[in-house]
Image 1: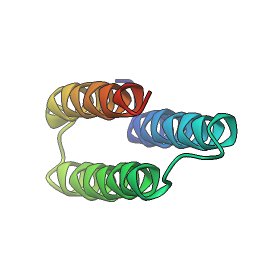
Image 2: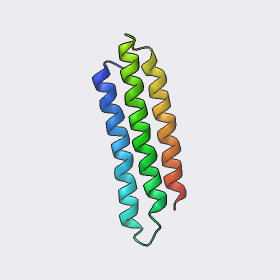
Image 3: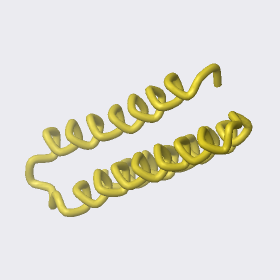
Length: 89
C-alpha cells in the first residue's frame, strides 16, 4: 500500500461498491424481506468504521506494516459479506 490516503480510499470504494450491490439486489427482489439486507449494510458500515479506526491507530503508531494485515481483513470480510448476499438468492 503506497499511502494511508489511498488505503482509506480503497476501503471506502470497496465497501461502497458492496452497499450498491445490496441496493441493486433489493431493487431486483422487490418482494423480499429487507431486514436481511439492512443487516448486511449495517455490517458493512461497522466494518468500515472498524477499519478506518485501525488505520488511524496504525498511522499514529507510525508504521504502515499493519496495513497489509488490515487489507487481508478487508478482503476476507468482503468475501464473507458477498457470500451472505449471494445466499439471499
